[in-house]
Length: 205
Image (cartoon, rainbow, N blue to C red; front, side, top):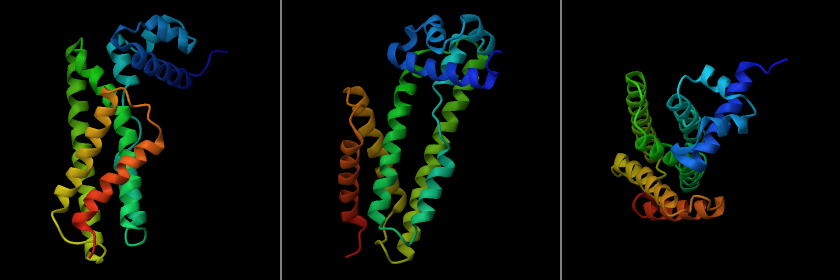
């Protein structure tokens, strides 16, 4: 019996992402089909164009809107603030290292149809909205920690923007300089240094 379509789609998307990351837009659907163990026809039956397959395969995974508030809410008033920011920073770096190669390939490949153009614009707006919401969520958390007397008062939205922006820039340089394979220890070390630097401005005296 053939595999269920839902499982087959998952296999195709996983294979497509690996091939696209390895070969960029020069990757062929035949190569993706071979890696997924399906026929080329099945790919085009499910994804009408190569561009549609690319967009589906390269979508960032995970719901930031739930993960970030859950992490911060569980730590509010309980866990060491610096440690919370370090854990959050490591999470961001991992996400950014996933997203940045996807964005770079998306920007270099123009959509083939008006519908795909509309989808790409919508995806960009959604990504920007999530990033802004993440900054506001972090700022609100820091404000709440201040009300508990655990950190000094400052412009918490600027601190949150500086925090997220520094992590994005770090991940971008890692990708551009070929260091995106650096291990968790190296990534955590950078995030810790960043948090320690920010702490000079918000830590209690």
